Amino acid sequence: MNRPFTDHDSLIELQEKNGANMGTSLHSRYSSTQIVEHIAKEMQKKIVHSIVTSSSKLSVLIDEATSISHKSAMIVNLKVSVDGATPELLFLELVELESQRAKDIEEALLNCLDTAGFTEEWLQKNWVSFVSDGASVMLGKNSGVATRLTARYPNLFTWHCMNHRLELAVSDAVDEVQAVNHFKVFLEKIHNLY
Image (cartoon, rainbow, N blue to C red; front, side):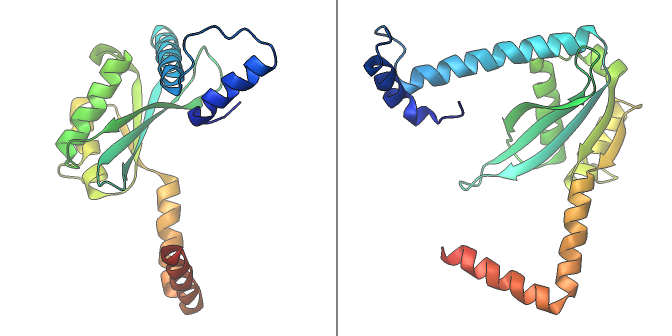
């Protein structure tokens, strides 16, 4: 249905007006949030169990984001074949980061994978690639997250995300073309105004 949880109360009321017996409990949006979180956790457990038992090869794609309140988070996605099907991109977790240092990001990622059900032994055999943006904290050759991970998982292939590369190329091209650059500044001013 893709309705926000704020609509939950009015949907309950609508169903009661339509004659449905809705009972007396689990009517708040808090309850609906709890139910959805429980279902999501159970679905994640089943998917991870299927991946682990089938020994599918795993690619991990991460991206960093910062909220309006200046909290850093890491989005963890998996590219994996579930039950022998065509590989799919799956959202695994949104992890709040303590800091944006490579060591802390690596630790948060490994903790996320472990909590989801991927053991160290399984990762050694089946984790084949790590993909991220090109920031030095991620792909830095001396102490980036990718470097730290390849020290721990020697067969791990690391890659700079093509979408991030494309965005950088377009940004560079826009900066070079004066007319487009003026238009970009104009759009940014409109965005900031409204």
